[in-house]
Length: 178
Ligand SMILES: Cc1cc2nc3c(=O)[nH]c(=O)nc-3n(C[C@H](O)[C@H](O)[C@H](O)COP(=O)(O)O)c2cc1C
Image 1 (cartoon, rainbow, N blue to C red):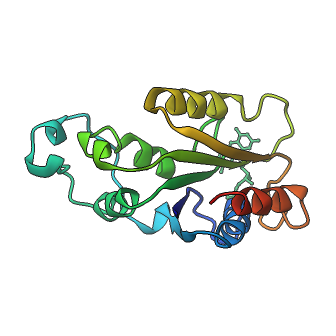
Image 2 (image 1 turned 135 degrees about the horizontal axis):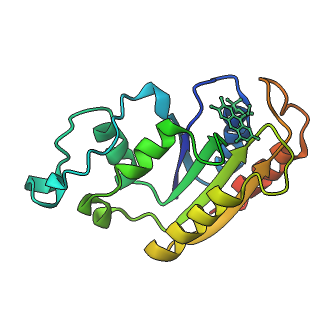
């Protein structure tokens, strides 16, 4: 299968990237894996114009970096969403990509399942709740399979995640996908 890992942190050496790489290493055992750092692409927020519902090929009127990400999503079987928790939500760069999936183009995708990888600084028991609820609602609405989640709290600065059990968990989750 093709596994696309969308990473929503600007910090290339940060905790989200380290977690995503661990997942990708495991997933590479049985699959083709691509990691996309969404901050490398200029993805503008959805304007809500709905012109993609009328345009030729459902093309978005915004000719930006999302066009390349659409092409990657079109051939993905599994998408892993990796984000730092920002104010109990996904990072803005990743949310922009998610919102740009408000398009009929997504009906042409063959994605069958999602993975959720999150990091956050605090160890509050409800740290991941709002993102997890959104993730579960998206799974349900689109009839997608939950292929697993790894949620790592208590990591704030770059490098904090080194030696964390979540990395092994992410590797094993990746390896279980085929
Ligand atoms: C704008 C912003 C908002 C944040 N909001 C939260 C939060 O609500 N809860 C929390 O535990 N950590 C929060 N954090 C901390 C990050 O989730 C944490 O530092 C994480 O490890 C960053 O991931 P990275 O190293 O991949 O960038 C926030 C950080 C930033 C920059």
